[in-house]
Amino acid sequence: MSTSETGRDIPVVYDLSPEATIDDVEEDTPYLGRVNGVVDYGVFVDLSDAVSGLVHESTLGEASYDVGDELVVELDRIRDDGDVGFRPADLAEYDVVTEGEGSTEEHPAVRTDELDDHAGDTVRLAGEVVQVNQTGGPTVFGVRDGAGVVPCAAFEAAGVRAYPEVELGDPVSVTGTVEHRDGAVQVEVGDLRVLDGEEADELRADLEDALAERARPHDVDPLVEWPVLDDMWEDLREVARVVREAVLEGRPIRVRHHADGDGMCAAVPIERAVERFVAEHYADPDAPRHLFKRLPSKAPFYEMEDATRDLNFALGDRARHGQRLPLVLMLDNGSTEEDVPAYETLAAYDIPVVTVDHHHPDPEAVDPYLDAHVNPYLHGEDYRVTTGMLCVEIARMIDPSITEDVRHLPAIGGVADRSEAEAMDDYVDLAAEEGYDAEDLQDVSEALDYAAFHLRYDDGRHLLNDLLNVGCDDEERHRDLVAFMAEQSRAAVDRQRDAVGAHVEGERLDNGARLYRVDVENHAYRFTYPAPGKTTGSIHDRKVEETGDPVITIGYGPDFAVLRSDGVRLDIPRMVSELEDGIVGGGVSGGGHLVVGSIKFLPGRREEVIDALVEKMADAEIDEDLGSTSTAPLED
Image 1 (cartoon, one colour):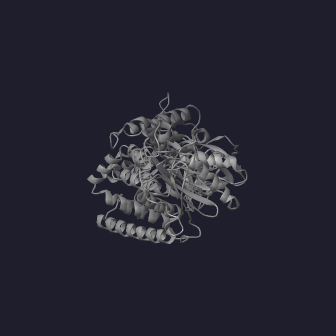
Image 2: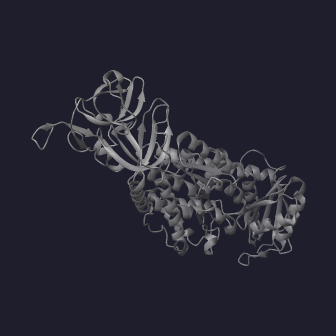
Image 3: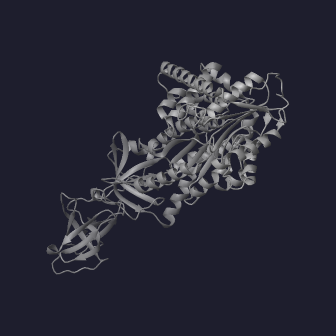
């Protein structure tokens, strides 16, 4: 009651806030309602955005109402199905008390990182919708504020979309009860409304400031002292920032990495760092699984088959789970003109792409499609700076706590890619501190190749973690697994090399280099390990060891050729480009590093393409540091 100027007690009628829920409505208490619908059997009245009920016509007497009229009501009943009934409150005069006065308390405003302290309480939360997932029961909204992301479950009816007007990216205010589901915090929504005007602008500004602060990479020192890393450090930080920002915005990350040792040593630390960062930021324990996916690519570029598959999955996840389209992170591939068709496909959907690579790049071709591009060639360096060396540092900027798990990976990636980088000895010393000598590093490299071949398009998450000893809980199993797979790999390579050895053809080129050719389609075991690239590399290494001369090796099939070179200054990407222009209708494509690569062509033009390729190789300069030092005869 309140008191009038004449001293009479006047009843109080409560005008609830828009965020009020049915839990705020008490029996025998009058509330100010507004008519939102008139039907034959009564009128529907709203007390707030979330509280609505029927005043039955039998209780209205002769009174009539229109939509928008005010009506003072009291709670009559709440049915088992949740329907609410009101009855008119017969008051000649009254005072109106707004939310927070009298018996209605304003719910506390909290941040997502404070929810655990409010279990069972009704709270208010303001943030941006980053996911809308319609389940078989409630609609689950992922709401992001400056501290994290929490699932907010709203139930309309089983499988029915609650708050259909709410979309991804909307600024919202949520009122609900803090609950724990399967060990994780969740808000059971009583009311959810989209903010607008000054309220929305203020929220967006706050979120933007918080995002910029939390997306900032950690300050870490490089694992080794190396001027190359100093030159590239800001580029690496930018990639770490973009990745952290994607996580904070609720954007999934889809990693594509070359399916070789260096590609794995680049992708696995990123995977580990991002999943830890996601787990830190999201209340949902399943978030790391939903927001990060790592996929191997056989080719050292983004093939259309992979791009269309990625796009299809992304669109499906958006439709089924209300997710944003992903950030595509290309590791150990993605820098060449061959990637452009795939990038153009993703660009049609405004999907952001970031590339960290060490293949010879075509920046003018790819940079228009990339949000960030890291490549040692862009800093006057070359492929000897491996992608694994770079990505371990990026991963540490995302989450420094992974450092002890990944210190040995740059050495493994370097050995796998035969790096002769200036810092390679320092990386090997780091690995030695973790118990890996040169033989161990070579064994892990061989085991990774063997596993990658058999995994094909599977990420092999748990197997790779054991092979790389990243988060592996059994050191003995790691060592035994590596030894077994390395042994299997070498046995298979020896068997293959013995099979093709009698069919290798050699000649001396005009520049003094030795050229070896082998038909790996007709003279090698097919559909088994090692693949043509590994077979060609094995033959090449044997010839380099036997002769000590500059050596080029070509392993070819009906429509492809794999190229390896030592001691000859080739530029395979440039040569492929010239052949593409020079052999009209040859279907020539390919690329790779300057001295390691592959080329494709139409089967009917194979002889013409390979002959033209050999002519270009014969014109290439010999690396004077190696020169021709062997007098060994050239095999027939």
